Image (cartoon, rainbow, N blue to C red; front, side, top):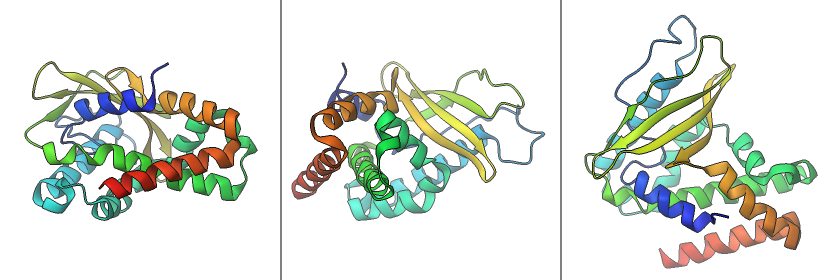
Length: 216
């Protein structure tokens, strides 16, 4: 089974310099007749904004977690169904979690992901993402926006699972170089919950995040 650490290494390579969302320079018109912003257009707009801010801010590129978290909360989280992402990562155990445990899981998981991606920001150069052909159909309520990272070396595929909500399209999973984030963490989280329970998983995540903070 691929560990979260191994998966993180793949993501650091594939998302080098891109933060959590890549730059998508081309938009398909398949959703043009709908009132909501098309999923491809949403990713293009948000990723362009994030890249501009990261390139212009030395503190973001140096890994300032507080600055990165503020950027994520303001510009990225409104377009992510993070509750679904966390619930899917926790798997069947999510139904057993109390509201307080669910909140703590989301808080620690967000810190985990931000710290994983933050190390790549200082390598932001001229990499770009280009969309690959879409398999979506008009009327779909869940789509996969398929893209690839282009710049150094061989192109790396990066895909986004997105769902249509009343307030717009939202990302709920990311695939980098063939590895879906949710599937990877689900295996790790299941092992920890089976061994220590939901509170044990929360404690382990919190401890890893605290340890990472002391090394920053």
